[in-house]
Each structure stands twice: as structure tokens, then as C-alpha cells.
Image (cartoon, rainbow, N blue to C red; front, side, top):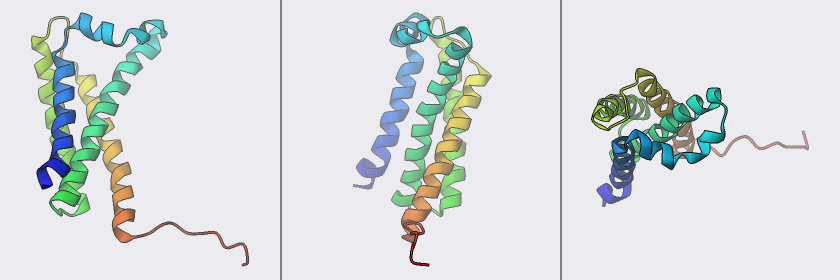
Amino acid sequence: MKFSKYWLPVVIVAMAIWFASSLTGREVGDAVWWTRYLPDFLRVRADKLGHAMMFGALGALGLRALFFGHGWPLIRSGWGTLAGCALYGAVDEIHQLWAPGRSCDPMDWLADVIGSGLFIVAWGWFFARKRSGQQGEKCDSKK
């Protein structure tokens, strides 16, 4: 049960990333057709944003799996997930060397790490509040 609830989503996102990395340069261009209408400076950033979002999802799900699925402390879960995402991002960039029209770009890897890190911090904060039962301070207008 733990696998299907916590780790299966991680595996699905990792497989989606791997599949997207296997596409040729032309297939990627066809898949993100809408970026052709963006100015050049935004087109480059759209690529990095895509990397950050996909690895952000991987990071959030990985954090969830380690924190809730295995009961690891939040800090350990966060660092472990970030290390796993960074390693997977590096392997993914190397994997792209075998896809025609694709390249291994260190800036893509950096976008992967930054995206996963931001999502890990955001979801870590959310999980910490959820675990502690805090719902936030309520305003009391009668003070």
C-alpha cells in the first residue's frame, strides 16, 4: 500500500521526465509549438521553467514519500529528496545526449535543481504546518 500511495506518483513523474528527454529535438519543438510565438528571451526561459516545474513536481512527491511514507524527519526528507532530484537531473541530461537534436545543458540541470529545491521548501513548509496542526492565526476584530 505504501508503494502505490507514496512512491507510484514519484515513479510516474520520473518516467514522464525520462520519456520527454527521449524525444528528438524536432518532437520537442512540435510538443511545445506555442513557444514559437514567444520572443526569443522568453522562449529560453520557458524551457527552464518547464525543467523547474517537472523537477519541482518530482521533488514535492519525493518529499511526500519520504516524510509521510517512511516517517523520515522533514529536514532529512528534504535534503534526501534534493540530492535524489539533483542526481536524477544529471542522469537525465546525460541521457539527452543520445536523443537526436538534443544536448546536455548544465543550465537545464541547474533549473532542475532550483525547481525541485523551491518545491521542496514550499511543500516542506506546508507539510510541517499540516503535521503540527497549525491552521494559522485568526484575526480577532474584538481586540
